[in-house]
Length: 336
Image 1 (tube, rainbow, N blue to C red):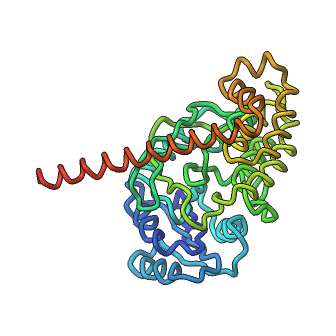
Image 2: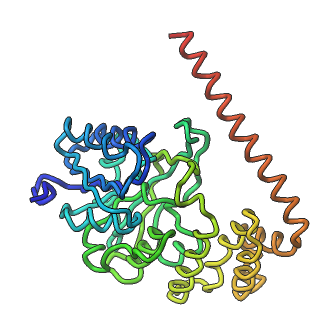
Image 3: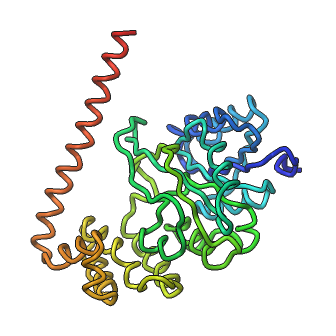
């Protein structure tokens, strides 16, 4: 019997892990360092071909709260579903195998859900961005407070990634597991399904930076932009018609800008047409809407120039922050 059926366990922590050997130890250690200790930790090795399973097994031998589950490769959705089926704690939190939590993540998210308004089934924290090396280089902006399905779609998945949330188990009991047919955007589809079909349709965003997310590591699912946009296209088409406060076209604004930025003009042009159905006045009132109008009207040649300028500036910014942090570290070590 899973220890999650023990009434003293409040949270099931789930990590779907595929070939994350260089980082999984750090992820597990961040869970074991939590100030809230009433959890079980299920790591689902999704058919890894590296040393992921061995690293998890070594941690499990030292702490009984860690349990390794090994399955054939089936994707992150199937891995999460397997862990959900083997646990029953009243709250669930997911941590990707290459991310890490601040020690107060679990305690703060539990408190957030306990004090949230009625109808809140999911809470998320703010995210810091780190390089593949683990060095933090940026803070990611995310909306705080109440988030309904309209805001989820218009803000294009405000939590940004599955590692930042804690969710009531009742949400999964009411809407089912993750959609294993989607190779990407699996988490976004689930949050929208909970908003559309459960008794807890709301998210709540906190103002604490409690997650470090590794930026676009080699081989990550999110690094395949075409596949992600194909899945995002399906997810938005399924859920945008359920918006009630805002025009469904607003759900396509940010995806269109992202597509233009990534050089996927075919997605950008099609989504821009759908976004324009919200009306020029509505787009002009929104900063992302104005950005969309600028990218859409620039033409392909001009957009290519804009992308080059943006990518150069972004790369320089990350290198500048990284260098400043290394210098600060050297100064601190000399002082020590």
